[in-house]
Length: 528
Image 1 (tube, rainbow, N blue to C red):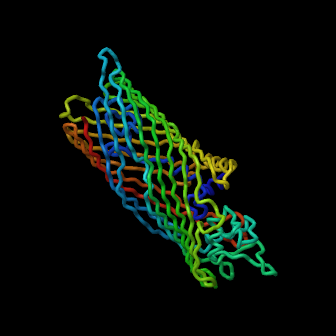
Image 2: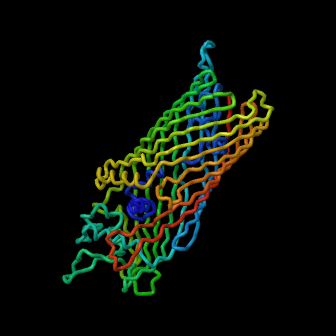
Image 3: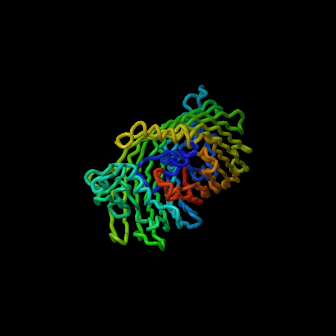
């Protein structure tokens, strides 16, 4: 089981088969970060039981029932992500700085129409909320004496039984599963077939990175540039019963755009005679998905100063379309510089695939304690808020729709790998606010637990938040900071299982990526 987990996780960083949707796509599109208005982010997004805050409707739609007036707000920000990669004992870093619009919310507050009814008001909410940012750059490099990615290209060709490489690797009868891998390597001279006594391919290959004594010594570099984000459009409804019980629900439309360019480079460092000078392979992927989910929740006030909340978020049922291409350039002493692309293949693997994803369901229990709640806004007041969230990552599912290389058995294998690799987790968010007349000060913390069953993989994410706000005569303005950090692994490739053990080639250790994100955001809003 552990071997299956390692292989599944390794697919995230491998420069092989980027087009083959893997279980880490499911994880990537299922996670979220602190989001909402600046006020909501500043308190660690602990919003499940907090009424009177627009972005609470994304956590618990029952909070919409607290509004008796209209409220409009928008949130903008600047984000910087710094990634430090350590690979084969070498550490390097890269960073990315982007502006973003993270939230737009409109609440239509309701007023009681029948004085004799305990239903105080019915309110509605409409909003756009950015739940995750994918924008980042990663760079790491190291010197490898034990293997090369190019080995997988010829091992894959051997495993596929290639005996006519001119036709089966980039020609008229190209094997679909090799169009983005071995076909490019063969057409650019990175791999070549052994020849029999009749000068014909005998079904075995070798790599230009292998020296005459079959040793390997290459400098390896991985350059990743990701863009895009996950957004959710929400239509929420909330009701207030006797100022004691608030009930609500929402229909939500998640949309995801994810663009990923990854370039893997190898430069020969071997002093023993070797044909390779260098090669690089660039994979370009664009994923676009949309779906639907439902949220229902309630908030109960046993006493005036305490809110207790419970919310259920259904899975998101999403449909994705991926487009992708792979380009390779190889420089060898024998053939010089050659380039080839997957789009050059006459009968290659389709450059588009469609699949569906079911994300995890969530359950949230929340509590907010209000200090000195009073109608006199000149008196100091404040609150502490807490969310406990359970997410079941084992419930994620992938299903492929029109890609002939994936059948039901392949989908089932990936879904079994999901259950073997991931687990249910408990996430915690806590935050508070102290309000002094028209000025408010806020702090928060969020902990998103590691989704991996293997405890050796550090997949947890932490966010420390804070901010300041101004509110007066229906206008409010907030400024906040969200600082996050996490450590994750990036496995560049896993050596194919049919490698000759006598060569003593080994899979390199995964790169360690230490990430730090800094998000400065501001919200402007009006109550009317």
